[in-house]
Amino acid sequence: MHRTKPLCAGLVALAVSLSFGAAAQDSEDKVIATVGGKPVYQSELTFAETDLDPQFSRLPAEQRTAAALSALLDIKLMAQQAENSGLGKDEAFQRRVEFLRDRALHNEFFKTRVVDSLTEEAVRERYDKEVAATPPEQEVRARHILVDSEEQAKAVVTELDAGKDFIELAKEKSTGPSGPQGGDLGYFTRGRMVPEFEEAAFALETGTYTKEPVKTQFGWHIIKVEDKRDTPPPSFDQVADQIRRVLLQEEYLALLQEARDAVEVEVTDEELQGLLEAVNPQGNN
Image (cartoon, rainbow, N blue to C red; front, top):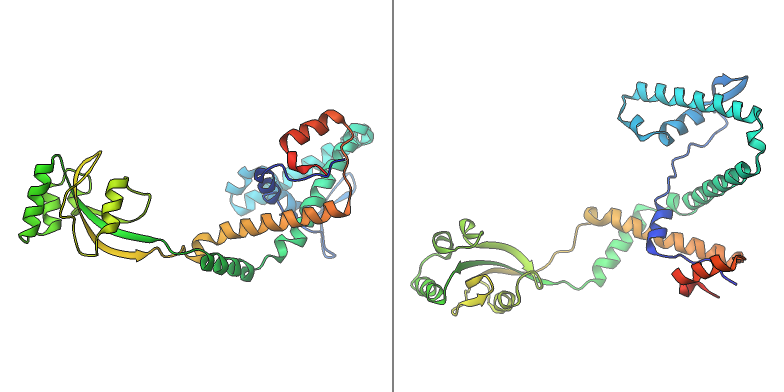
């Protein structure tokens, strides 16, 4: 016995990213054409504009509508010819139609139960919760002067002790790419620099520089810390879309679990059952 479970996060993402743009046919949906005496509705044209070849989206509005209408009429014509030839009664075709219907129902059910009900307030609430649960991380803003030897580095320290300006010395003597900017490395957190440099930088008080040169694989450094602060959290606008996707995935999984609890699924083909168990060993009951 096997109840279906999600195989991986990619499948969830795929399910969540399915299109939900189908136009609903309402009571005022007007007939815009006929094909073989059968009506073609405005809602079908609207659907065609969103569902057909993406290249239509690059056309001006009127050309896009005309192109979609032309394609829709072609589809209707060919569909009638296929129906007249008996293709619609073919068993394999009917199974395909049933699959497409099930997929459309799957998408619409998720849209009505989850997508349409996800509010901006829910996204904001999750953002506030995540920010509150994430401890701030310290970061420093530092400058450095990079030279090739310990002797050169000690000479720079001597000049700094005598009152020379750190920024000007960096521009004059540093061999690093940040030299022309006064050795400015901006803000960084732990794990961004090589260990020796990082240890020295985070040990310094704001406004002070290393009295002993720091050796790394790049050479000899004199480091000055300009500022220390806790990293600010990302703004709501920066992460809103990411949070929205996470919430949709969570709700999709909850909706799927609800369906699994209500309906038993059994894979009767033993080989397919084995393949399913191999990729999803936790999915067996």
